[in-house]
Length: 333
Image (tube, rainbow, N blue to C red; front, top):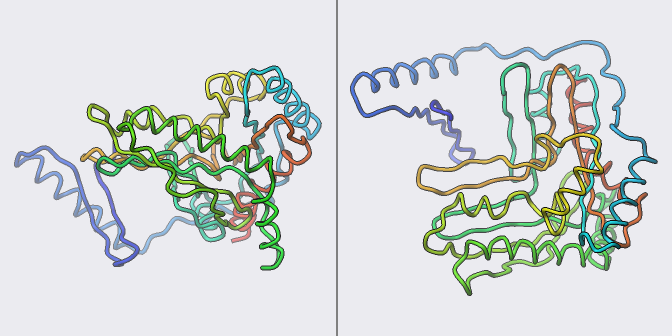
């Protein structure tokens, strides 16, 4: 739990220092001292130096293209057998990191700005760096909202190619069917904690653009029913169907059988819960994990009955592209 906070308002350009303490004089004095120390450190000229070193080398996937294709085919066999409607499979890439994790974060947010951007220093030389495009669940007062992203194309090199790829994405029957299925899953998640009759699809099949890919997006909302809290909404939504599949539990069992490594941070969730009970949680996508001097990047693709292994493989590379580029840029600083 964070007890000392530096909150920067990007609109007003103001920084607020906040500390949490018990309501007695001794703890108040200690809290004031902590704020004074934060102010002193923020006013100093010191800045962490970037790590320099030899070339970081090539990315090493945790499976060959052939093994990924076989994993897609195995997921399709489960789907044809009636075990699931969709299974989201992923692959992981690793390389030595010849840059500081914070420089990686600076580069990633510069080339791939997203609704959720985060840098976590976890201790033991472990960091989590991300710019996630996707909301898992948000609760403000009684309003609960989820925003599934499903359906992907790379960005075009020109505005004309970008428009063509958007049209291609929105007219792809497979992508549309997959998206509608995940919107229905989102409606079910919200419906578990919402007052009957309040679940609504506010926006359906809009295209969101990011640095390397575009996605189809929809927004589902509802009104929390009496007796349910924001934590209940988080329990209902987690894990996201867009990174697991449908039905969720069976899809996760299939993923556990097919993927060679446990996912860890990838496809989890990160966000905040306020003292007032509001929360805003992202899915940990476009996220880099740094541990032991290595950087790990993971990306997935949703497999349905008529999926093509080659296309799903390409989709994982397209999604990982921004993270590859950010690390390349950071290592050149």
